Length: 231
Ligand code: CA
Image (cartoon, rainbow, N blue to C red; front, side, top):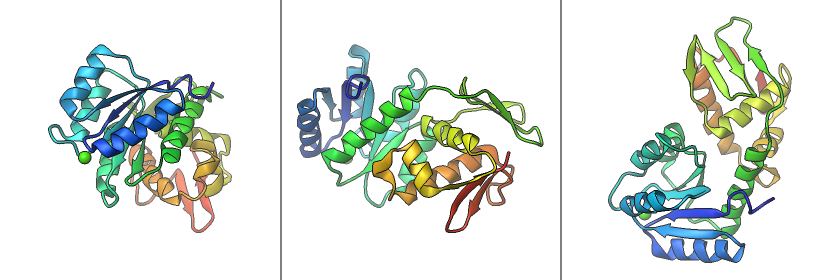
């Protein structure tokens, strides 16, 4: 299964050293790889070819990467992994908000790229477990199977990672969920050290679910221990 679902990879990166190294590595693992070095080229490739996943550099010469994510999300749910500069944490967060699914930070190894692909494949294959969960105050209604979230009657979009986090929280409703469990179940065991991911995505989930993200009612941080979901 691994390597089949996400066989066709599009790399959008104007740094040709990076694009070449990644494409050689991925071809060696049996992927079909297309490379675009600008936003315009990316759109040309997407118009002609179906791809299973896009690795997208945020710093392209012609079009802003965030703009490209927004454009793609208007017509496709294809997984997008952002390639971001080391110090651009705002860019990463903006990209995730715009609909990107994950990110890698330069410089990155082929191993990291492959790990992202495995994580996306796992999430795609993890399927649905249970039904509708409603917070005690009725504000938030979560349909885990259908991937539909309503907050105060309005449908709210969650990214695949946010859905997977919410699914883990739902499974452990009311219980302490430690960082290791979350990282392992959402991203995979090779991510257990990536505590920074949790801060980013917990913040996003709170923005979407809570009345006041600074004073969460549902998604609590247990300092030094993990998180607790009390719907
Ligand atoms: Ca660049």
